[in-house]
Length: 319
Image 1 (spheres, rainbow, N blue to C red):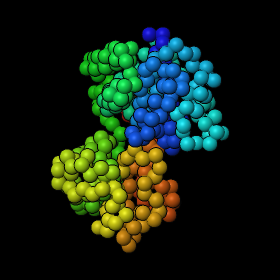
Image 2: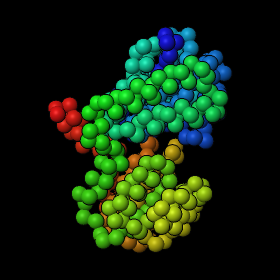
Image 3: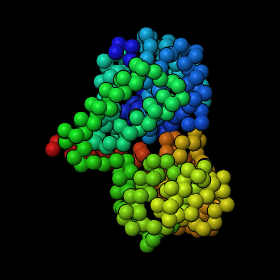
């Protein structure tokens, strides 16, 4: 177990808006990990990227020195200036051996999450591992470690009170939504059909919201969600041509840059001037900062949910 290593960047030490610069989109993940493995001779590795963490779990007889971590980050080809990269190197968490295993256990049990008690992180860790396993980046060491990790985390959720009041970023976002004065049967524009948007859209549907339109990079991947919501679905490339307006915009994609800039947003408004609601749960954010600055918007993002999450944590620890 001494050769288990973790290099981690989390919401506890990195601003969420800055954490977005380290997220690796699915399309680039394989090529970046291949370059990293070959350059540093890493036998096994997988990558975890969520709305509040970017972590690399790997196996190897390396000391996580400043020089090694700097080379590690360099080989991942992050598109950030050198001085910004140096700042990240000052915010990194490094774990080795049993400390690494303990960190992964705490993470998988949500003790390191923005929202303590949410079970989604365990699924995210498992999917992250499976994605890299299927691509050939992992072997027996990480397989056995993951078996142990998942078994232990399940026991924690089953036999402790940690998830007694289950809550998630999605439910926090819905809580913020309900605090606003929503119109009857609001028009809900959904960008992206990943798990976060699926969960939030289904949450809204459960509470009698029913007017959905979905845009997704791959239309086929959104069909199941569209059927469940009785929604129309369009390719993301057609977003700029959408002229039917919206009251609530929900977005969470894995895009490395903002996908709704000021011109796109004004096109989506199609002349409407009332205050809109945007739920942007992407890291990095899908909505360009200029949109927020120049338009009347109720803007809900992951970082704005931190105060609610911290209050929930205090309630859990005091009960």
